[in-house]
Image 1 (tube, rainbow, N blue to C red):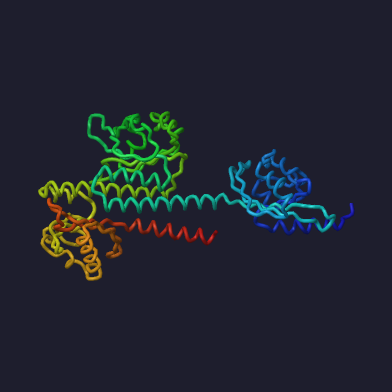
Image 2 (cartoon, rainbow, N blue to C red; image 1 turned 120 degrees about the horizontal axis):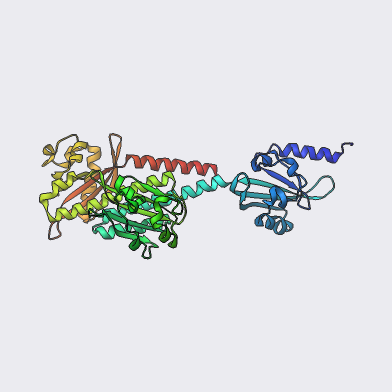
Length: 441
């Protein structure tokens, strides 16, 4: 058969579209495939002989019979010459559920003057996933920040715990959050003490224990018993969640992550976060939630400490040394009244060497001066002050609280300092990831 100029034009067109990185299909006016790019065959795992000449909706055993694609080809394009960024989500054989961005062009062939359609396909599934993940991380960071603010002003333990639960539900969009304390009773039961979100009587039915038995091997009991985060990625399939499956399904829960509340190296309780989606928690989000739980445990400990100090100065030293964060108590002039062993160690001294000395005199000027300014602000305002600083490459989160006597007068200050070096590194990593995503967008 003699080769025609039309054949030459088609071969030339095919040679051009085969250089394209993104898949492309050329359709005739009857929506049959004239040709497709090499990348189309590679991405969708089909052969040319199964594609060319086929009706677009019949491709791949009719898997391209997609309502949104029909809308584009049969409703939108007849009225427009071009249409950009038309999003389609669909299950494709061999590659699974993907999100595709369609760009369509109607043109007239050079030969024959027949209408053809160029349909370019861009797979944006991974970009969408990254966008969603970044959005979730930003929300979790916001929840972490707001819970830290709540810790600074908290004075009532129950109100503080309920506020943190509410912050996580609101900022992170999870279905329900609750806090339970580990009891040392005969059953080693877990007692719910705070919650937020769609609960509707669920906590009255859970009957969780942290003992090593059936109702203690779920996420909450395991987190408390082992002192480590525990996750249920899918409540419908996780055998350890069987005792609560029916009730959780009624409430629309699909997965959960449980984070222990630690003090003195052991868990005194846990915070449980329930999601409506199966397996929604990424590694980065879990790390941020773990840090939030540590802040929560610190806040609860701090509230209990302040209450204990008001009730009994005699037990203050024992309580101070049971806490893993640096704690300083000083009078209005900055003279040290008490400190815990962690604080002394970080200063390179013994507790016996510290008491009676002026706190600000122990620090180099570049740390003492801003700290003195924050302390004076807390003393004048009667409100807590929070700030961050760095010493010898270690970043610290500092909280200054006014200490009052029985008459309510401020007689001194307490300073809580926690090591946030790892958190800083995490936040810097997330910021870098955010910048990289913006560059890709």
